[in-house]
Length: 294
Image (cartoon, rainbow, N blue to C red; front, top):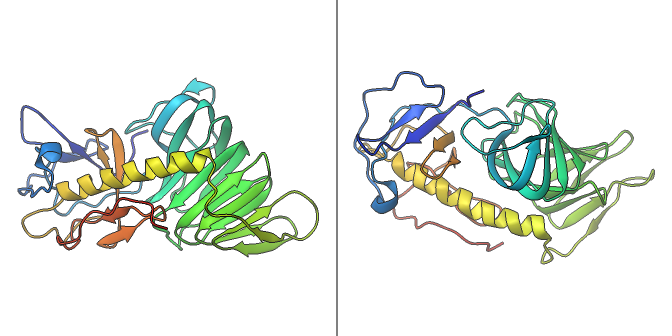
């Protein structure tokens, strides 16, 4: 199933353009583009009043190593998906899945996740085995975002970094806020707090050392750097002569980098990993921000 949204298409024989990913007719009112990095972005053009749709949850944005979806080898790409009810497993590998605009699910090695819903208005993912990290750059309070770990339902309420571990049955919040509920209890966790899910007693959070990071955190930080840079390059390609006063927040497919790029609602966002996301109407004097300065 093709994802909704717009794709930035580079054509070496003709001027490039942004196309709708469902291959709808191209708009003809394209305007000339201004670039900050011509060597990388030459040939990309602008769809001035494009409205980027929300890709359904489960878009596979990155695969490294041996990863499967319902037992079949997984690939990343414009139409690559984990469908509702399907299970993605990482053996000797990692995977990055898009859950909502600005929300990245990154799965550690020897782990498995199941997508319980395919509606962008109600995202629900279950961690079956291993470990996963969710980075939330932009949160939509109208659309619930839930991760299920060992029967406990964790609703991500703010932008942040959340680590889920099914082996140890624990949830850790490196940044942000999450509401965790099981059959009998409910509790909110903030930055620097973790929660063990095992046992029948009341849920009790405890502090953990934020300077300690496991492999999925380290890999996610590298991916966050790359995702932010792809976003900046996409935003540059959307800058038009009228200052790009009109643009659509959401996902844009960039085949040159073989990645979905997130364009934020506000002119400028800083991800919880400390990387900058820019919209086409961001002040041009803002320099790119790439680095973990939390």
